[in-house]
Length: 412
Ligand code: SF4
Ligand code: SF4
Picture 1 (cartoon, protein in one colour):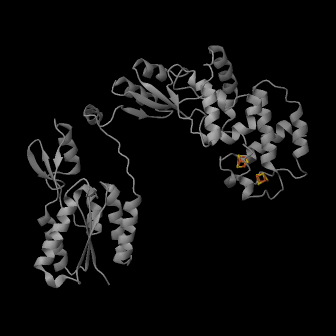
Picture 2 (cartoon, rainbow, N blue to C red):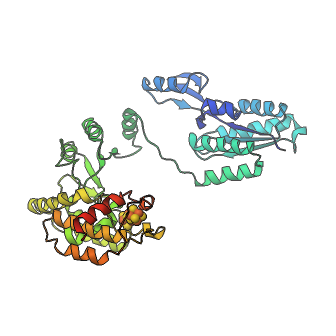
Picture 3 (cartoon, rainbow, N blue to C red):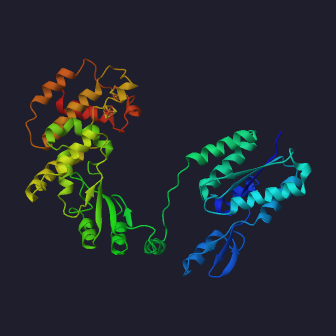
C-alpha cells in the first residue's frame, strides 16, 4: 500500500485547515516588499499581507522556493516512511520553483542512493496559479485517503492541468489602473446587472472605467431612460462605451416570443433596433447562434435608427405585455416530454390559449374567439388541482392556479 505525501508551495493558497486535515507540506515562496525580504504565510497571514499590500508604492516581487526547502520536505517524508511524494508546483513557465523542486530531487537521491526504487518523487508542473492548483492537490490528497493509486492520482492531476483555465478579477481599482498605465491592457470596463443601480452609478462616477456592459431592452429599460437615474446617459457623459447585454430580455424568454410575437409585433430585429437607437449604446451583445441569425442582426443594425415616436410605440406595446412574460405558459411542451396529466388534461395547450388571451386583452385586441378555441381544446376531464404537474414545469409556473383562472375566464 503506497503512502503518499503531498507538497504544494504557498502560492497554491490552500487554506491552513486543509493543510492540517490532509497533512500537506507547504514550502514558502520568498517575497520582497519595498526592499525587505519575507516568506509567504510565515512572515504574515494572508489578511496581513493584503493590509501591507494596500500601503505599498510598488508591487511586491516574488522569487523561487529555495531547493533546500524542498529537500527538507523530501528528507522528512522519507524518514516518516512515505513511499511517494506528489509535489505540485506553481507554473514552471512563470517561476523557478519547479526547477528548485527538481534540483532538490537530484540532491536527495545523490545523498540517499538506496532510496532509488523505494521512494518516488513525482514533480508536477501545475502550469497555473493559486487555488487552480491548490484545489486539485486537495482532491488528490482525498483520493489517496480513499485508497486510489499514485498513478490514478497523477492521471487526475495531469488531466486537470491540461484542461484548467483561470480568469482573473482585480479587487483593487488602484492596481487595475496601475496595470493599465503599464500597458498590460488598453481599456478598463465592468459588467453588472439589474438591481445593482447604486453600485453601477458609483463605478461610473469613479471615472476609472472606459466601458461597461449592462442589460437593456424594450421590455426593461430601467437602467436607462426609465430608471431613477439614467445610468446609460451618465456613462455616456463620462465618455464610456456601453455594451448592451440582454437585448432580447434573456434566453429564458425565447420560447415566449415565439408564442406572442404575432400579437405584440415585436420581433428580434425590432429589439435590436430599439437598443441601437439608444444614443448611449455603443454595441449590443446579440449572441447570434448561426450565420442566419447574425445576418438578420446585421441587417437590423444597418437600418436607420428608430425615431423617438417609433421607440415610444414599441415600448408601449412591450410595457403592456411585460407583466406576462414570466407568468404565462410558453407552450414549450418540455413538461410533457416527461409527464402526463393523470386526468388527461392538456394543460399546456389550454394555458397557451389563455396566455394569448391575456396578452391580446392587454394590447386591446378583440378576444371573442378565444372562448371557442379553449372549448375546442378542452376534454371532458377538468383539472382537479392535484399539483402533480408542478415539478415538471421548468419555469416554475403555478399550473393548478393558472388552470383555475383560465377556466374561470374562458371555460363554459
Ligand atoms: S394540477 Fe391539473 S393539470 Fe396538473 S396534473 Fe393535476 S389535474 Fe393535471
Ligand atoms: S407548463 Fe411550463 S414546461 Fe409545460 S409547456 Fe408550459 S411553460 Fe413549458
